[in-house]
Image (cartoon, rainbow, N blue to C red; front, top):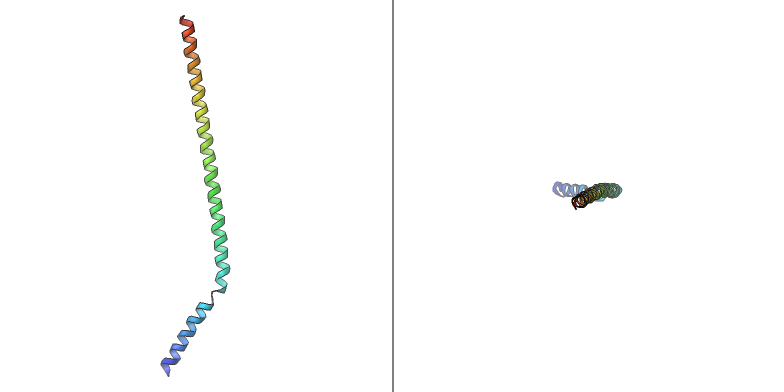
Length: 83
């Protein structure tokens, strides 16, 4: 009889613990929203960093082209002066 009573109490404890998950749904929703928010923030940060890198790259390309044009014009001026 004691064993049956013990098994019933243990089974009741498991059933109670299993049915207690109603409050966890709200917490799971909050965690999910937090993860989504953090993911969006992370994506926005990566995109902003990429824009900065692209801007630096474009500036570097423009500077290299300007230097190349300057060198070409100096070389052309030197050729004209030697003629």
